[in-house]
Every structure is written in structure tokens, then in C-alpha cells.
Amino acid sequence: MKIGLIGFGTIGKAVTKAVDNKQVGDVEITQILVRDTSKIDADLVRRERVTSDPARFFADDIEVVVEAAGHAALKQYAEISLRSGRDLLAVSVGAFADEAFLAMTRCAAKRSKQKLLVPSGALGGLDAVSAAAMGSLNEVVLEVRKPVAAWIGTPAESVAMGAADDPICFYDGKAREAVSAFPQNVNVLAALSLAGIGFERTKVKMFVDPSIQHNTFHLSSSGEFGEVKLTLKNIPNPDNPKTGRLAAMSLIKSIARLTQPIIIGF
Image (cartoon, rainbow, N blue to C red):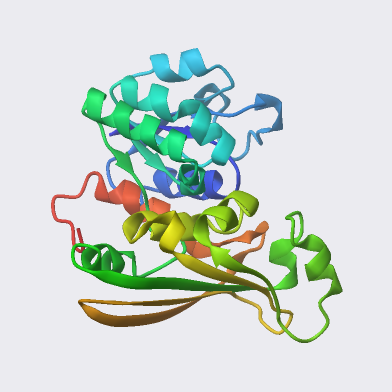
């Protein structure tokens, strides 16, 4: 299977390495779309696979488009990816907090008879929440706790830099506003909202926590099915502390599933 990758940051590099090392089965990355090809390390990827020209990228005989480049890139390329006759595997799911963009993407997928695929990312439990949403789902709450470094370069940076020893809760509210304000930190929240009861009803609390080393998520949900409580402690990626290592692993798993004859947990 030939895939085209949009983005070559922390996650894109991990995916490329996994594909080149044959960790995901019979998969080949034939095109990588980036904004600036001069910033690409030739030791990490063959230059002939890299382009900044969308026309060249979509003219290739790729079968699936994999996005790992951020909200702006997903908004720019989601519709054309689907309408070009490819499924789209998208990491930057927080972009779908924009209702108009979500509606446009859904329409493009339906008309082209292609699929938008969203990996679970750095959060577990999406299978349980999405199954529970088939019945009456009363509550979904996500508590996000990350160390100081994970909030640098976000609107919470001033809070993070002022944190001493105790955790500081700087956001307590709806998922929609949180996803829009902190796009590099809570794509997991967007995936959770889409899997369950939506951006308006999903609640989130966000903390700067100087006492921890992991990006930590506490998920709680209740409804007709019963109750689920789940805690994940993700090791931050050393190259980008905003992103846990599990986010890249989740995307790699999703790519592998595209070629597997047996899928567990579908």
C-alpha cells in the first residue's frame, strides 16, 4: 500500500522510520508534503520523496493520505484528499472543533465514498466511550495534567512558568474552547468528543503540574452502560514535550491496521 504523508515533524519522522523499518507490513511512503523542503534532513528521508508542491503530491499514485502536520494543514488538505479518491488518516483532529469544517469534511467523505480515519492518539478508552454512546451516555470528563515543559509555547505558558510546587488548574470548561485554545496539547480531547457526546457536553480540566514527569490523562465516563475510569501516564517525546510517545505509536498502529486481515477492537 502506498501512502502520502503530510508533515515531517515529531510524529511524521516516527511514522517514516516505522514504515522504512517494515514495522507496519507492506506499506510504502511515496510522497511527503511539507512547507519547506530545505528544512528536511537528508539523513532521515530520501529527498526525492519530499515536496512542497501539493499538485505533485496529489498527482502521485498514493492510496491513503496520512496527516501529521497540525490543524491548519488538515483544514487545507482534508477536502482535496477525500475528493481525490483517497481515505484520510488524520492526527490533528482538534481542527474538527470547527463545526463548519467538520460538516464540510463529512460531506466530502460521503460524496467521494471515502473515509476519514482518526487514530486514538495518546488516549485510551475511546472504544469504550464510542460503544457507550450507542446508548445513553450521561457524562464524559477528561482531566489533563502535564509538566511545565508541555505548556511552553501555548496560551498557558505564563501560568506554567509561574508554577512552583503545586498543580495549577488554568482551564475548567467545555471541550470545544479547550481544543481551539490549546491545539498542540489536546487532540486527544477532540477525539474523545467525537467518539462520545460532542464538544459541548464533554468537559475538561487542564493543569500545569510541576510534580509530574508524564503527560497524564484521567478519563471518567458514566451512562446506561455503567461507569469507566481510566488513567494514562504518557512519556513525553524528548523532541516535543507537548506530544506523548503514544501519539506516534497510535498512528503507526492505525497505518498497520490498513493492511491487516484481522483487526482486533474494531
